[in-house]
Image 1: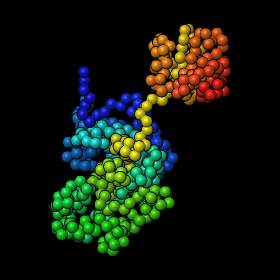
Image 2: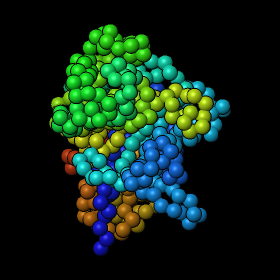
Image 3: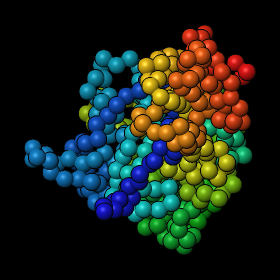
Image 4: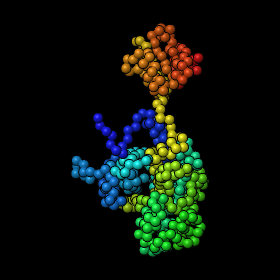
Length: 431
């Protein structure tokens, strides 16, 4: 007996039915906004992640030497891959480039609630637009996807921030501050004790008093005050954030957005507006997912300067939010028809099954030569809505029996007229 690897999961049909419904909802929302689906490889060169994140990233990768002697890794995220793809065909691609995909990723990290070593995300990105409308469209897609799942503004909130506001303010307090280290400290603000957080800011170059003053300022979220305190770059970043929020208002997503300058997103490649989705009730303490702008990444991969913004809802944390809110789809099988055979009736039963499937129905037939009772039990087990009984005696009378599984009621229908013009005939159509 083999045990499943830690951090990897099996999904049986009932759970996969719910997950498929969620993925379809996310992808349908993306498609409505004109995002086009792409597919990407599971393996990339390890050096691509080292160049982006540093040598230490290798400790988090499933990295190895393949049989061709190449250092490769299972993809831990999509952004470097899509950056590579944009660079490869940058001149031929119409701008803006709007892509989405849903696929698994792999990271060797500590397993915890909502975080696994193999995880699934729907990535949605826009390349080639620096306009506030692009940021707002990503926010609007995310809001539409969540509300399509049945969530409301009482269930989630987008905490929206701006990396250039944080970076500009930090440099206002101390010109030689390590901005990246300080922003990473801000990202940890809610995860560590206050003294440790302020200590991290101090390690980045602020005095303890400056760290306290900086934190007090960003905690207010008062953009007008912050614009007045900062330099011209801070004022420009504040204006950009306000323009994004104004566009989000027109796009229908502003009601879900709260200005939260203590939200930083820990990855260094973020450059402008960033946001994280949180459970409004606080029952789920970690962010559900996040996104933001990364305008320098394409150029760092050898391409032409190309602004970019994206978001990546993960299925595991999103399922926690949906379950908490009571909108996670039922984990149950769904079958429209079970065609039950009694005696030597396979030819007619198969014709009925083919006709029903051609109309788009989910149909099962007996493939195990089971008894009548065993077939009824199986039909019940797969949640068949309707059972069509094709028996020798029924066919002798030119009929089939149509049974509604929820009520147990049944009636007969002319075999030559079943399913006939009815794409999805039920008991009620013949009773």
